[in-house]
Image 1: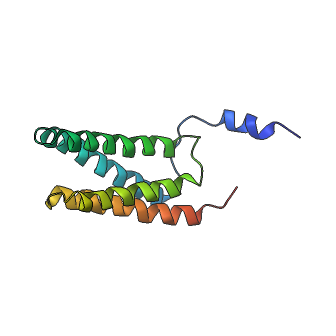
Image 2 (image 1 turned 90 degrees about the horizontal axis):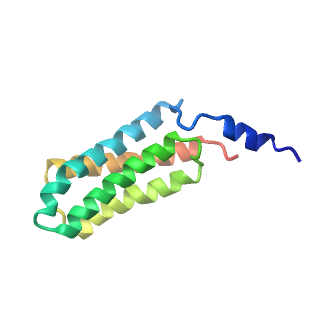
Length: 128
């Protein structure tokens, strides 16, 4: 057996830009959701500390997901986690009976885009 794949992996840059246009849509949608949650978190934390902390954590989840997606550590299976995470944030909004306003609608649309584009990217990428 050759250790060539490990060497090739180590030679890849830590971060790289995707070659697929749909991937850029996914990144933009994830960052839109993250920015909205970071913007709203200080306001929400004033009347509900738990929800405010969840807003910060949700934003960090999307930012961390983008960084992982751009890294050499990204694997095809992680698309499934991205899909579940985005759908969970949408479901949590309705379960927690969040207020319906322009910011929440934009965030939920962005999260739906993340889920849908992750499905596309998962199917488009060939298994290793």
